[in-house]
Image (cartoon, rainbow, N blue to C red; front, side):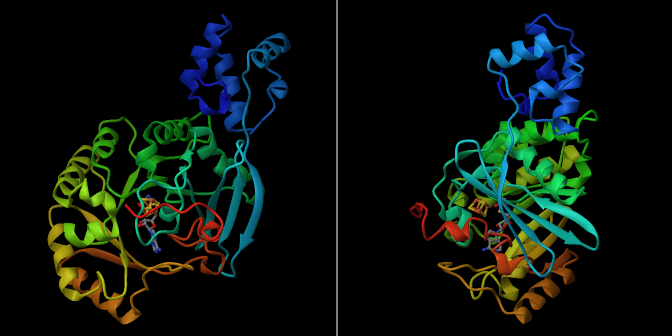
Length: 349
Ligand code: SAH
Ligand code: SF4
């Protein structure tokens, strides 16, 4: 069992408490102090008897906390946080304001193994998975600094489904009514399309909203942009999404990044419409965000509008997502961009 008490679900805490032959309801106190009061000092959990607190500490149990190293704010209200992890690694988290509602864009890994060609994070060498504690603490730290948030998107650095166990554990912790108690309707998990974990997720009891990064409607073009497509062809991905939809009843968001001269013609919009015809979806067209060293350019606005019109004609719910937080490299795909000049770079797959 994990020694970092923040990294345990409430039922896992009960198992720890029981192993010390203590009262199991102490697990509820621990959980509430960690996930509602954000106590990072075992000694401050006063409802638990002092000798037991001391015993926990002596046996190596502790409560981890991230540290805020830097914050940057864009004129559109977007804030980017740089967090230091206990082992000295760093991650970024973005806080977005939209009509008074706050959304946090959470990271799940340091770097990413998937190596998508257009993504700054994908060019950083993968370092490690985040723990569930490090995922949920991004929320707690930002809420303490800037007040409550309403929505969470697992869309920051990393591929959440490549860190399946810790990501699911973070969802369980966040959904617990004795903790932060986030409704699953307010949580979106974005994936590049790993089919086995999507199936596993479909078979669990809790289901976040799912967003899938497609970016191209045929395997050849998609493989150029996203190396994962060589192992996970679109046909298998689409079958898996149908399964997820059958199990959850949820509409699936499709993310499509508009890249100049590559995936943005009306003909390709037609192919995308065909690909999505068996699913209830909404498509988000994202103008490519470039960064120093990015090999692609964003599509011109007129081409994005034409592409959207073509999808709408085919009956697909489509929205164009505007750039947010660009002056501070906080937009989709830009996280980690500022480290590219100094960090180790991943060789293209
Ligand atoms: N790994 C997950 C979630 C993190 S990436 C995923 O790939 O879905 C979050 C979103 O940003 C994805 O849709 C991704 O394709 C998109 N993205 C990556 N690089 C981008 C860029 N340069 N411009 C716009 N969107 C980008
Ligand atoms: Fe990883 Fe997502 Fe970036 Fe691809 S787009 S490299 S999956 S973070």
